[in-house]
Image (cartoon, rainbow, N blue to C red; front, side, top):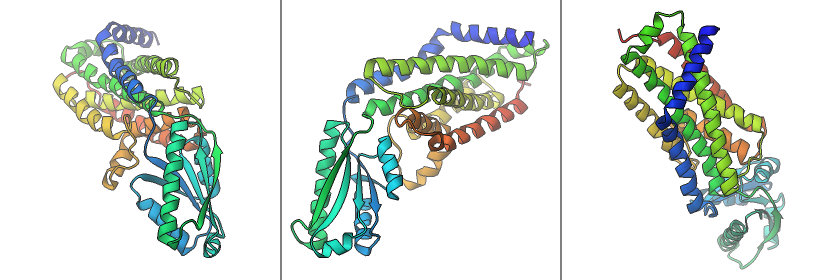
Length: 361
């Protein structure tokens, strides 16, 4: 226990003394928050996220849904009323369109009705959404019946969480920071091995498990502090909200950091020199930086990329963070993300521990 405490204390001191490491891992995330916050913090998305509920389930209503899904300007979600309304209340949808159970029959009498629910929290988004839905209705009137106004809209406004691009970007930057700060653990192990530090430590009663545990705890503490700083900047400067549980948010940060540490330790166990470790880290982090959803949504990515996106741990870190912060979602909404991260962490740490080497020979 004494050796563990000594190693942990030394690990924390070394991290604290490496000011450039702290600045570089935190700096880009902070710069990104300020840049995207100032450029896009008050801007709105022009991609309409719409939920569609087909209660009529007729050939005509199905053709309407199919036509909406083919519209590249729309992101359509379909399901039951309760399913779509739950997404709408969380702020995941800009609007919800309900095709009633008597739509086809009413259409024959030129008296069909569509219920549309709007998110009125953001005034500029509301105006865009209302205009887009009205255009859709006008197009349906012309295509289906060739008549001027047989389909009417019943508008229903609903206030959900105000959501702007900076609300999207802050959780993504926390995810990126966790990746940059913890993948570097592998390179540090390689440097210690090259410089003979690990070989000298091997001559002491210190075990590999004690060393890895101390490194893990020290970096987890740093990750929590850095994540807290990013969130504080988002809240104080750009009025970002956390609608979810702070405990769940902290747990996600810890699990995300642990996952990236596990990958870093694997790199450190196999790379023969510092250059190789840095190269491998770059090859792993570069795709995640763009495909992990930190800077922009990946919902509309090409189909062939979806398995890769879902395989990346950063995808699940970002998704869980946004479910908690942006939507205040229940545990069930991000439990799969946490399960994936836990699996990454367990397998990675077990693999790294079995492959750990004190020396280059």
